[in-house]
Length: 305
Image (tube, rainbow, N blue to C red; front, side, top):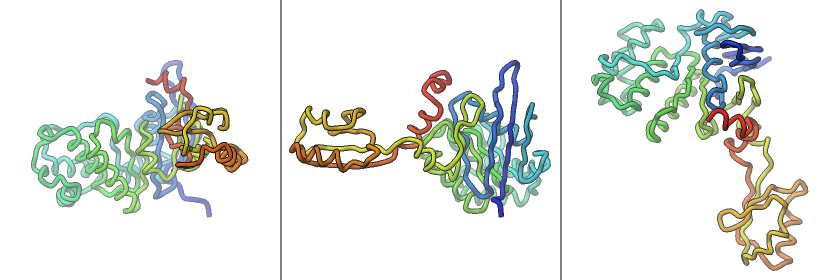
């Protein structure tokens, strides 16, 4: 049996003027997964999400949202946090959450009850009756996120949800996302911050220049780069450099280099026989950030900066 999909896109295209902002994007988001759309600023992430949601129409290609060919038909089963945040400043926090739920078909009484329970759970119970204008930016953003899930959607779409949040509220947001996943929802979010994607995503797409440059798991993305070794000698000496692979560089009191294809044993044997010894040795795969830079390319990152 094939894997069930919450969202699919095939050859999606969107033009603004004479430029293809999205240029033949394919995406398949498994139901129940946390799926990230990664890319530098201006890569086409927001435009892609808006097409998937039916906010704007593609100029080419096909998409489905919760099995609906016309995304708006499934809108009551979707929660959406746009990149441009917006709540009525004179509305109280609990009322704002209930109001956003009502826009998705949730009755007011249930919405108010859930809003207070959700605020309590998020550590914001004290803010339930405070007006939005009195809240910090981070608190207001969390309130809007709660408003996007109060109707218990099957799919939650978040556009750059961590933007502008301090580390404490970023951690709260990560916990909320994982709680929604554990409830059974599918999470689709865009970001240009690799740390969040590395911790949260089951699968991800990396987009640059309007095209998908990679699709797969975090581990598969990291595997596009070779393993790295960090060696610390027992007896440091500049002459060690001649015994290491060509790309070796000094780092943290030792040397870092790409793990040779034949393994590290021969290198270690040379170092020991030369009398330098081993004070420390670690071998690891480069992180998602390094893989992202390799996949996207430094030129694309500099152009987006």
